[in-house]
Length: 369
Image 1 (cartoon, helix red, strand yellow):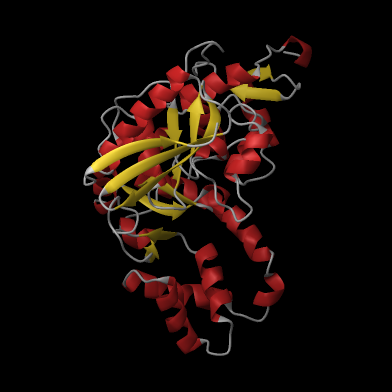
Image 2: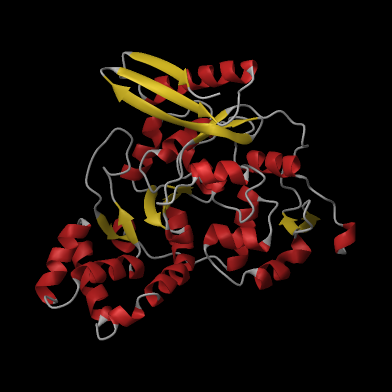
């Protein structure tokens, strides 16, 4: 189909398609592990956001479910897309991590001159042995590496090891309500089994479209951190349907994926920090305006928690706990209509009750317009 004959999907149509793929148009009755796999992982730079993300997407989500998945090693936290920490199933950790290596290798190249003269293969082999013996913190690993390479920059060695080795951040780190230092072991040690074959890049693109489409080549590259995916999409094109957005960009999608109409109602939703909903497109207009993006994305890499009204980011929120009280503070960017304001308060109280049942009182506060 030529470009002039491709159906045009406006911003609201793309918004509703994204919300449907992201399980945010309605709560779904599915196990947390199935949702994590459907979403191709959940960004987890901080331990708690994936729990909020699942609570907003799943019916009757139990905050203890993910902790149980992690302690039984069916889910884990590992560096994946864009070189960032993700919560994924054990199966996806095996399948996706090999694709990530190309992204991490590019980071290594950025400091190649500093690594010149270092036998990095020997450093990585020693680190693999040390981390396979037992999970260790970065500080512990650096101290042990310094014993063998006392004249080298041990911080640089530790950084290079994290890029070269598939490392799992082990529990209790990452479990809701638990505390603990970030300790790492190797993926092979943690899963204690033969690696399954990595899927092709074709499979990666198809899964991305299932969770984030319709999307452009630039979108899938932005999500994955990989480059030169145009030829992959071109190869897949006979299996896909093509659209264009209001700016004439070509968008691809799975033929049978949900594409609700632009007027389908979208409920209010709380979206946690670092959620891939806001991070997985080069053009984010389908979910957030550029003006609002500048307020949510900070210069030091923090992606603040947001809430949706009529499907779009409408402001930010955070939970504060003190003296037995849990307060959810809502900071709108623009005035919130009364009906949605009441819905946000109700939703917020449910979130506080689910995530912080130990608090004696729960309260929702609005700030700003």
